[in-house]
Length: 119
Image (cartoon, rainbow, N blue to C red; front, side, top):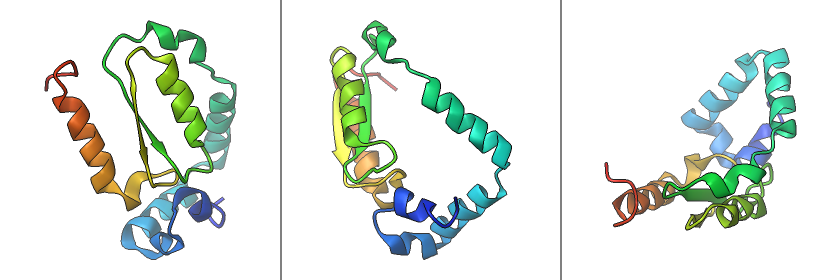
């Protein structure tokens, strides 16, 4: 898993060689394989799409336009299923570590919207 994860997680292969990239991959290597497999099985079988219409809170869905593990179409499906949800596509793969400014800006804008959550 550790050898193939950089290609799924990072749009820029060099990210795996940064201190953050190495730390994320070290954490993956230290993860219990049985627990990781069980988590993957649970995610594969867990489908909350039928309940999306019940979500009434202002919702921001952030998707990665380069994401191979969870394609942008999946994020679009979530946003389409939640009333008044906003989809923000960022040029990221599965993890947002390469574009924290873009993801942070999307979150900040969402939290500042007049009908959005007021924190």
